[in-house]
Length: 63
Image (cartoon, rainbow, N blue to C red; front, top):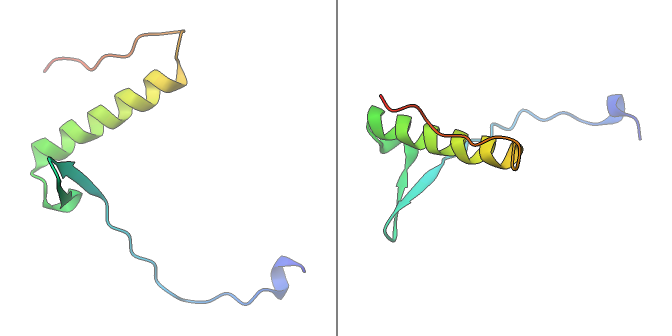
């Protein structure tokens, strides 16, 4: 089957991200700006540490 034979729908997909505080799931949109920034920094640090494992040590700048 070729791509142009597929029927393309117009269904909208919505996603919501959650972060756990203890045992409570909190939508990321409900976090304050500073909390979202901390979460983003943590995620980037984990990703880069895994990507460069054994090659570099990734640490966020203290601000």
